[in-house]
Length: 287
Image (cartoon, rainbow, N blue to C red; front, side, top):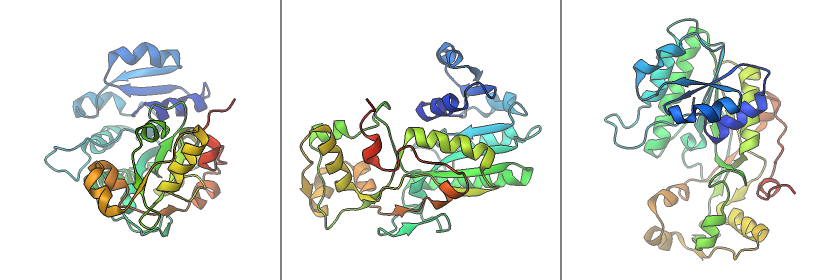
């Protein structure tokens, strides 16, 4: 579910060892999916009746579709995940399900190290909807599904659309002064895909796993590093008070939360060895 960039990377890693199916609401995607050895299934997470065919069809499920955006009546709910859960329970449920959540469910942690035992404290409607989705996924455990919830920070990769900070650096978008800066977390799209595949078989029941690399960079330092790697000017630094007057609200929301994510469970339980443990390892395409 949600067979976009990361979903296609998961399918690539699984290869021909399993039969692969992908839900899609676009018939035009059919040929491209089949070319990757993926059988398309017509359906739409926003139309629950179209999901009936999912019942009993798969033994393992990766759910990477985001919740709907703004404008729904119950802004804190994720009706897509609820519709999927109801469809999967109609017949024999899958033995495992991997759900791609967000690190935003932790809210602002003032730069503290965060492991999976920390209580959630979402500060945005987007993060609140993810918390609701996590609750629905955990509830599937009562039906015998071994559910894994992956909390994912910023995804990057040179071959991913919008997967590097080049465009933002080229625009000269400011970052915060060092005194006001926040810690940010990252994961290369290929490492995320490998984590999803590993969780399908190795994830413990109803377990949350932080999926992030080993870097512990503040946001401004991350963009400075990227600028140096790309040979671009470093972004200007501004105090938080000025940033609130000049930067978009979406960007400001990311600048209002600071945390450093602990990934010990990713390595110990899922046994994932990161191909890109530091962002400097993955921002430049291999030659």
